[in-house]
Amino acid sequence: MSLFDTLRRAADHFPGGRSTISHRNGWNDEYTRKQLSGSASHKLGAMDALAIARLCIEAGTEHCFDYPAYVAEECGGKFVLDAQSPEPEQSPMRRVSVLAREAGDVTAVFLDALQDGKISDNELADIELEIAQAEEALRKLRQAARAVNAAGKPGAVQTQSTQQWVREFDGAPA
Image 1 (cartoon, rainbow, N blue to C red):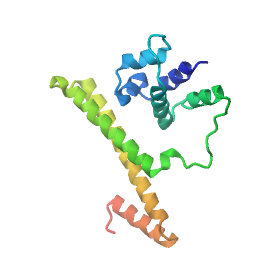
Image 2: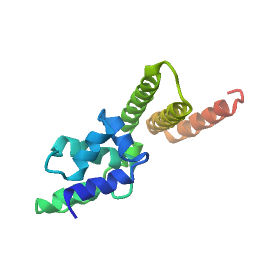
Image 3: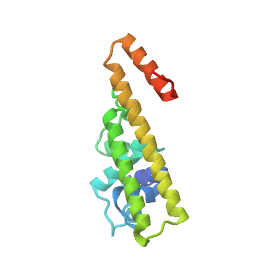
């Protein structure tokens, strides 16, 4: 297996595939295809490889750790996930970062679709998918904010705050 194989496999399993990775990095699909082909005429830079790997790791795709494991092995080391680290998905700062990226994706897809002054059915489907992903990122950010808020309170107050939030969420008076 080569360095290109590790990134290609991860990119192939990314939701939306190589074209989504291209879009998120501001590249065109042909550029990404050529970068991942291993062609002598197109050199894959370390920063581009890292950008692809990071997106795949953030998404938790199959084979997402192949690239860092390959690099570690080539350098005489071993890639091991830090079991002590909190899950990246749970970090409030990570949630803010994901939300910002998703909002940017919504904007980019929407502006791309409007270039000809019309929005086709396929473009609308892409816009709606990006909006749904942004809404999910916003929901997860809300959960993270509530978790951090609750963690800073004594146990009895945590329970009371949680109960109040559930009532508000369900539409019942607080």
